[in-house]
Picture 1 (cartoon, rainbow, N blue to C red):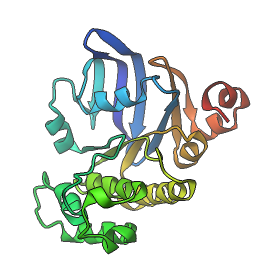
Picture 2: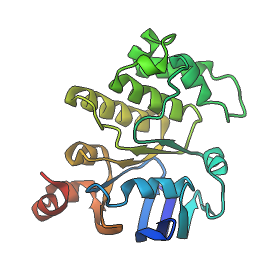
Picture 3: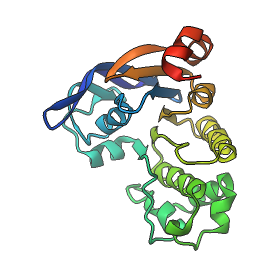
Amino acid sequence: MSTLLELRGLRAFYGEVECLHGVDLTADEGEVVVVLGANGAGKTTLLRSVCRLVRTEGTITFGGEPLDGRSTYDVVRRGVSLVPQGRGTLAELSVEDNIRAGGYIRKDKDVRADTDYWYDVFPRLAQRRSTSAGSLSGGEQQMLAIARAMMSNPKLLLLDEPSLGLAPIVVRQLFDVLARVCAERGVAMVVVEQNAALALDLARRGYVLEAGTVAVAGPAEQLRDDESVRRAYLGY
């Protein structure tokens, strides 16, 4: 597999405050990478850096081309899509309008087949296609956020705490869907997640952030089975 996303010496800033301090990370085509760490470690800032939502220094390369100086719109057009923490659905629009809005940037405007695909992946959304997004449960809103993000046919999907606030059974179902999407669509994923055990089951590689730096990195199986890493960084 060839490298799709590469961060080298990434530093990120909010105003004059530096939040990431020289982070290196790679994600290959079709690979799932998980980013773990405590609250405030810089996980969300890392995703926002890729999307050009914060000021950065260092190198961000996507598909062999630098993203430095690109606008967020241009990053999305190049094949990056973000599911933000809190889902970010358009509450007053219907489920179907939310999904179709995700395909707005596509050159082909025939999004019917993909809309049907996501109704197959998430049957609950099909049942509620005419319902306003704001009336959905938390789990349904997360399903909708993922479907909408994938409607742009991204090469890379960034997910920020997809399990946040969801019941354990819903979380398990959601991660099963992410595994299916990765297999069927060949999309790479960078997943920021607090549920370390579940995320490492999904991922091929993992990074643990601590105070804006990479404390540990390696194959997901290695991180999952290393007792010292689990105790120090993963909380289980």
